[in-house]
Image 1: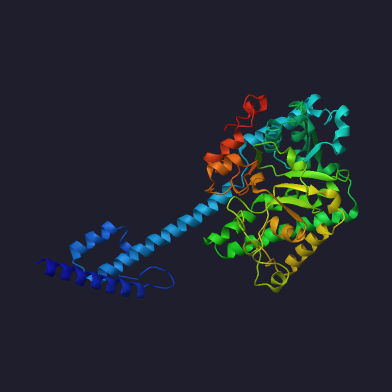
Image 2: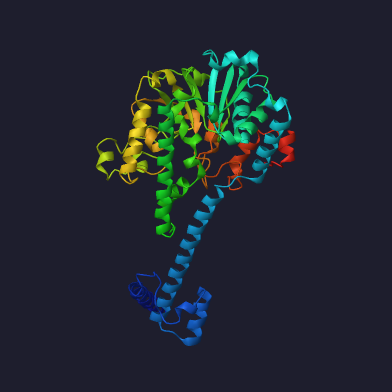
Length: 458
């Protein structure tokens, strides 16, 4: 009896397998859903079983309808994933209401309060702005709250906070708010300079170069948008970097001006550059004393995973090596270094053609139809600084906390000197990962009157 039952089960399994294979071959290649009569009315597997019981379908029709439902559900899942990805990236473009409020309140304060317009830094500290015995940090940002977190976290973790000089460069729109914040919320232990781009008197050559750079990045963004629109924004994982490229930061002048650091600070020979989406977790003063071995930039290459390991991507993930211009100039297996926490030897930079090479490759990208690399600020910089990068210890910089589901080891997170919310999900946005954004919010003074009035909440 048992043998007969097992034989019957085996036969049933073979018939069902054969029927499913036939069902697979019956799939409409264009729509990806089996074209079976009545299958469109089935919304769930329960409907399928109920229909089979009532209509006494044969096993082939059951298999066809099963396959149709599976493919229909897969199609719905892919559509949902596409929508989720697009909506998530769209959410990353927004500016929270509290930050709008903060900027407006501070701009008003600048207009009516003489203290908010007081000189930064005070006259007795002006000499520190060019004194090489101090630690000079550069921030290029239009985000007041983010700038305050970078500076607060650096000072709070420093054993010599009085040695720090912070050079904050912002745009004309944000200048009054940024100035008012640091004029009213004075920092006794360090020096803060706030300067607007409109206050620079650059040469005609530099102005032309900056304008050209920004126009090309605008064209890159517009090209990506057109391509995605033509594709109907169909979901593919490799499209994520394209969606990131539509972010306002990718066409922000402040985001790309780091390639002009020697011109921004002609009186400085060395600076530490920090992005505005970082948090300093331990004293970084020794970063200033690092020997760059006659290189221009100090950067983290490999992360916490041993030799020959990249924190995220190698050159092959950034560049199009099917193009001979790329394949003849770059090694696809090279590891990309991290932007956002770097040491720059500006004196040595001025002796190179790094900025000129950056512009040359931007023009090549333009002339090639933007097919040389994935969009972003890093790829052209990887080429421009090729041969000028000094590898620093990976514990200095942990990046990638601004992605949708950052996979970060707790030990790595605690041990890193600087954590970087690189990626779309900035900690001040609602889409920021709740497990890590608290590391950013703990450096905000929630008793500050402007923070309270604008309801900034962690």
